[in-house]
Length: 251
Ligand code: TMP
Ligand code: ASP
Image (cartoon, rainbow, N blue to C red; front, top):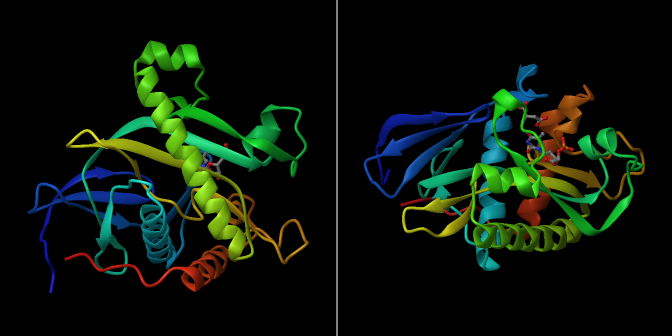
């Protein structure tokens, strides 16, 4: 039984499509098998990735909600479908880094693997045409994307997400190196975590594996041509399922 019917395509991103439904307060998000990196310079189809990311995101959103973090998530639909509240996404990517990796080490004299305490919070302007550049406080203010008060709330929420995910993944033998989240406003003006939280948007290392490449269980496997991308995502789902029950089915 489906509790909704699909309406028109509202938005298509690199990894997901968002559709209207017959319910004004519900959108349907389809997770695609498309993988992209380096602002879509590198592309592939990875069979099964959409379903894995949908499941992982659903379980993580449910976990966050249970810990008091507001999200857009309502429940899962079919294998690659998630039902969410419609959200006006703020075009700011919030990245929290617990361990130095990725772009940070390319742009700064910071050794990969350095522990970052307190965790580093970076804001990027979400716009592929500009290559998602790092935002300064002055640029953020100039663009008027958020008020200072909204910015504080956004950063507080991101840090709360980090604390909750660090604890959860830590208990599953996974090291949360860094992650990106997007936030937005619901139709009632509530600031919520939106988009997805998955191995596409987090760096996750297997604590039980010493080898610097073998331990990678996230999209870096794709970015660095390490192979075994879907298998790594499957391992992340298996671990998360160890802590969180099956995702709730919407409707
Ligand atoms: P970075 O080291 O490339 O800046 O990435 C930091 C984190 O953000 C990493 O966990 C991957 C994630 N991320 C995205 O989810 N989308 C993106 O477009 C980029 C560049 C990074
Ligand atoms: N998400 C970005 C892209 O699709 C960059 C990345 O994740 O590496 O190109």
